[in-house]
Image (cartoon, rainbow, N blue to C red):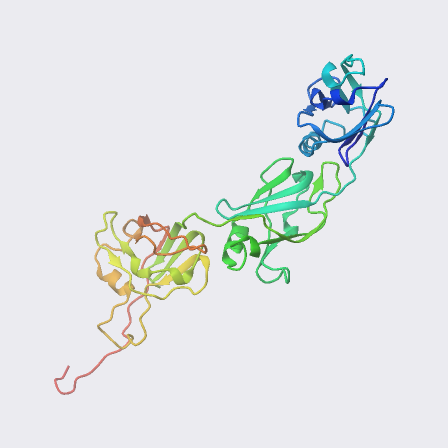
Length: 383
């Protein structure tokens, strides 16, 4: 028998004319040797069966899934000599014209043709809920040679500079024709910060340079330009605050989130500081001055004043009000952030859940000496 690894075709040669209708390849397996330690059963069936005029030569194509399994096993049909390529079959594999079943055997291949066909991507999926990308290849590939920096996800068929993200992560699945890899934090942030990429199939395209991966015969993959995603799972996980820092000296409160959030969705009126877990000694924010870009970080300036309030001595900034409350923000243990539901939304519009009390990660006390910035004199009353 002969076996072509490129096309998955096998040819069996029999000693006499056989009954084609009795041919049952599910009674056979392709193995590494005469033992059954490394075998792939051909239980998925076959296709494109052809019999020559003598009735002694049978050719067929191994199912794609079985070929992927064979290529994923580095012990089967690797050597050019064919010493690691055997066909095991039972008596029920086939019978002759008189109904006599074939003698079971474990036969070494006569000729093995190496796989020389380049693998290529058939489809891909983007999952922003689990932060992963799935690539389906035309055959089994070896992730040990995976080079993610040669993969770009972009929005249009045009420029790959704007609205595009070059990946840099590592695959999380072993040898297979399906490559699943988890986006690292940098890739995830870049994708979610790009509002025109990855929100639906029509604006999620994949371009891959040649050689981004190899098959298990070390044949480098073909490139792909502008392959549209077959599925995009948008982010349905609410954003969460991972930590926050607060400086009483500057009034800057920096929040870090689990994913990029929309800066203009932040409602500081739903936020505040409390001195105890039970909410005592609390001050709710009124300021609206924050960083003006989408990111995993947002800085709130609690020392800011509304336009026109700088000359109003009766106006107090949030920082002023914090300093007026005894036992509030005088240490880490008395600096807790509280947030109501929907105080901010991520790039997919998911609302953040309430934060009952989160202790500050880095606390900076007030180290700035007060200074007189303005005074008035009443000449009539001598004040």
